[in-house]
Image (cartoon, rainbow, N blue to C red):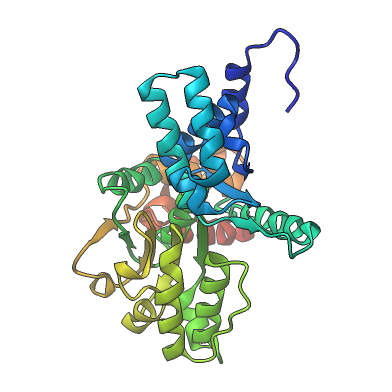
Length: 353
C-alpha cells in the first residue's frame, strides 16, 4: 500500500488492514524493536479475533517461542523499545498479548538450510488456497430467501463462538432447503478458516466409491493442501476426526437421508475446532442429533411470495400480465408455496400457452 505525503499513517493502516482478507506478518530479530510494527500487529490480531480474518505468520530466522515469550534477540529488541520510548503499561500489555497470540498460530518458519524461494512458493500456495473460496450459485430469483437466511443466522448467533454448532434445515422435498443452505454458506463462509459444501449426499452415497469420495472431498476442502487419500469409510472416519479439529470450518451436508452419512462425515461436535458450524439439510428430522443441534423447519412461501416467484419464471417480471392474473393465482394455490413445484408448473404452463 502506498502512503501519500500528509496522510495520517494509523488511519491509512486501519483502512488497509480492515479491507484485507489475509495478513502475512514477517517476524525478524528486529521486529520487536519497531513501535509501528507492534501497533500494526495489535490491529491485525484484534481483527483476527473479532472478524475471523486469516493471519499467516512467517518466522524469519526466529522461532515462534521467541515471539510468544519475547526472548533471545527478538526479546532484546522489544525490551530496548520499551525502555527508550516508555509506552504505557496498557500499550505494552497489548503488544505482549498480540505477540503471544500470533506466536501460537501455525506459521512458516524460515531456516537457512532451505532456499528462500521455496518458502515463498509455499506461502503463495497457501494464499491461493485460502482465496480460492468461490461462492455457490443460489437461485436466479431468490424470492423470500433473505428473511429465512436471517432467521437461521440468528439461531447460530445465539450460541457461543467457542461452541461447535450443528443446525438442521428440515422440510419436505422442493421446500428450498438446499437453496437456503447455499445462501448461508455464501453469507458467512468468509468468516471461517475453511469451508466445504457437499451437495446431494443422498445421491452420491449410493454411487460406487461415493462414501469415500465424500470423505475425501471434505478432507481436501477443509485441510488443503493435503496429499492424504482416504480408501475406506472406516479409516476415513478416523482421519477426519484427527484432521478436522485443527480448522475452524463451515460445513454444509446437503440432502442427508441416512444416519450413517452423518456418522461418516460429521461424527460428533468434537471432530471440529470450536467455532465451527455444520449445516445439515434433510427431509427426515429424526436423523438430526437430539443433542446440541438446532432445527429450522422450512416455511413454504406465502401467497405474495409464491405469486412473485411464479411471475418471475413465467413472465420475467414481478407482477403478472393482466391476461394471466387468474391463472397465476390458480397455479400458486395448486403448488402450495413450494418453490420447486412453482418452477416446474411454470414451465408446464408456458408449454400449454
